[in-house]
Image (cartoon, rainbow, N blue to C red; front, side, top):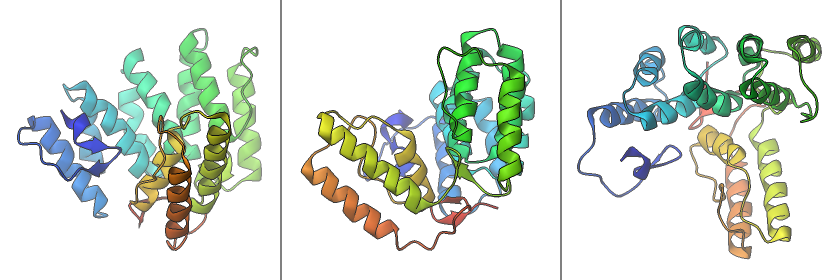
Length: 250
């Protein structure tokens, strides 16, 4: 299975002797993207959204969010007009990792369609998260409320930049959030809680974060995290820009 070959988007040292045709095709796209060749993005979208294997669709959606530019969100238009709820939930789960506010109009359109369902409130939660707004479970959000939040954000911020949870994306800032979360988990004697931040920073740098969802937080893992943060701080990434394996997304 492809799931056993990848941990996020890193190839394991071990070889899997047999792979399906779709798994092999996915790997070929991934290798190109890791090298900075993003010319095949549109063909990649056509491939993964129609894949017969569910894991290819899920991995494909997360990889697309990691490599897409602002304008690339348009590649999702046809897909979103006809996808079912199961596939849509995957889209919503990973879209914050796109770091682009150009995704919000798509989410607002989806919310208007699904407003009176549990999925509608999941979309509302996603929009609030991306804008850096607190989401209140007891509030029944409307499309006008969410649209106003986005309008307010757009008036105060440059939408040509990339953002993570309402703040200009920068590898150093995400690193600080990971350290804070790690310290919290250590103080509570619980495993690491959050999978999105390690994914965002690891995909941007091409260097895997030593903490990830479910990992036990020990003094050793904290030491590894500090060493990791020191190492990636040397990467010459520009605040507000987006990267995949240290290649800038244009």
